[in-house]
Image (cartoon, rainbow, N blue to C red):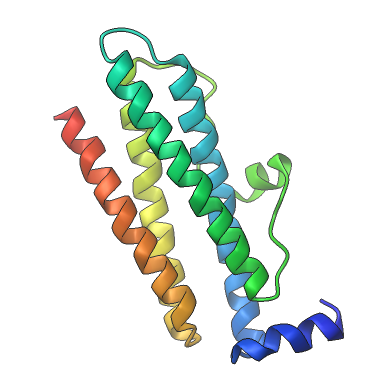
Length: 162
């Protein structure tokens, strides 16, 4: 980061050390969100059978929400003075979620997405804890909001599976 950029970023009231402690975890989440987004788009395009209409619509809602969350995470990275990851190669290198190059049946798709959301919840919890540790209430609050949203999504996916 240039000295000029550091000076601008420091106006958030957080130390450079605090900001730097959050940039990598945010970028790792950005990577995981991109993988979950891509998986959800894949399933949206390729779902078939009796569950088509219901799942096609649900997957569209989910990838639309994920796209918004991706933007928010990237903007949080930038707000803290970091550089947001921006390539698929980087997302795959730093992401903890795995791509799915198969086309499972509808229940398999829901199960796969559920696993992804549960992983994201855990990662956002760790981010919230780290943010609290460095006294970044904005990032902590942001992470808690996403946790609440993804807990509801995970509950709905679990309920669908019975």
